[in-house]
Amino acid sequence: MATIDGLPPLREVIRDHELVAKKSLGQNFLLDLNLTARIARSAGDLAGSDVLEIGPGPGGLTRGLLVEGARRVLAVEKDPRCMAALAEIAAAYPGRLEVIEGDALEVDVRAHLTPPIRIAANLPYNVGTELLVRWLTPPEWPPFWQSLTLMFQREVAERIVAKPGTNHYGRLAILAQWRCDAKIVMSLPPEAFTPAPKVHSAVVHLTALPEPRYPADPKVLERVVAAGFNQRRKMLRAALKGVHPRIEALLEEAGIPPTERAERVSIEAFCRLARLVAAA
Ligand code: SAM
Image (cartoon, rainbow, N blue to C red; front, top):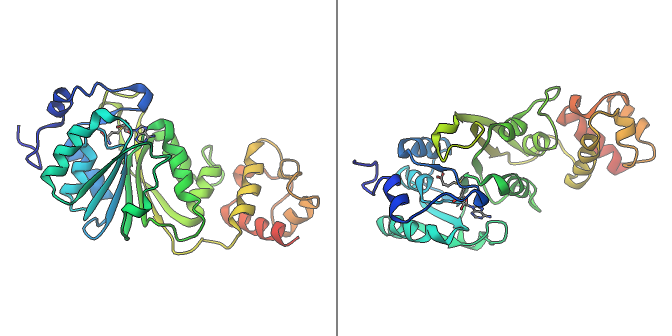
């Protein structure tokens, strides 16, 4: 069967390289190249960008990114069994695909990338949130990347884009939306993957804002938000007791009722409170 890039269909690749999916590595593969090309397109204009992909596996999304014109793709994959399949893709796209065999939580990718940089991945569920939090909390802002286009379990995607007053609103929503535009751009049923996971998935697209939406010291904001949501059922004056001895007065000054719960407080109000805590 002809494919969009003339390389063998992914089912053949998986069979020939004996890539039986491993649960321990979060392996749920996308085998439809039209779908991976669509995900690649949702990452924005790739032509002038280096793209960092975490967990290329047999290379479905990698091939989508290359077909859609990524200047270069740097792919970090932990499973050594995938290297031969990825080498075949690299050979078909001379100079455009570099593969690093290693753990994405440990590899330093910066030296291998030239800006502008976009990140795109069907993330392994076991390290997905940790990688996202790292990308959202770099030492300096703007970060080294322009955009993140990431596949998550639907529930995690909803936590990233959640608005105040909804069930999913929490630390992840604030971390993401304080300094990024974040939206769900695609939803996928379990059958889109091989093997099919138990839950639905969604692709989230985040674009880094040039500067935070509201001023605040990132460390103070993180401390206030973490304390607020650690005990999300408690009123803020109780949940934030450890943050500052005069927290009740600071909440009032920030315009937040001290009896309010964290899940109803906007990012703007959290930033106001963080500024007051930092100055007090
Ligand atoms: N991109 C492929 C696709 O869409 O079909 C595979 C996605 S699969 C959900 C996740 C991939 O991440 C697997 O290939 C797995 O081996 C890899 N992986 C798991 N943990 C990793 C880690 N810590 N660092 C790098 N890759 C990892």
